[in-house]
Image (spheres, rainbow, N blue to C red):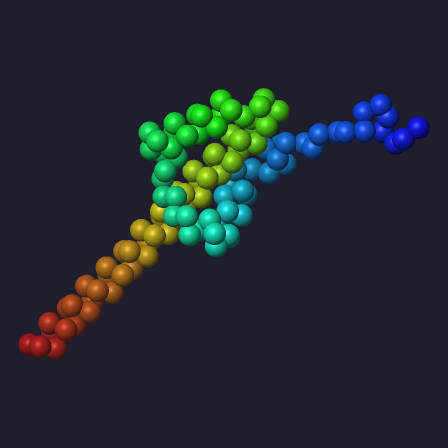
Length: 108
């Protein structure tokens, strides 16, 4: 008789029970392809919420926990990405303001 009889197929434990949404978000942010998507806060918009709801309705129950984990991870990653972009924009604005002050002082 073969190993594991009569049920050789054992489904994998859902990813949602092995990692947190924060861990998945960090992995997503480490991927260049994800960063290039620049999701911003898509999942926090009505269209994004509609897409997440549609995916949830189409997801079979055994995979629902993983789907919810991924949606939460995407939201966390998008917020972190937005925060980083705001910080960069603020830094550029400060440098531009200092440059303008120095330029006007040099002309005086």
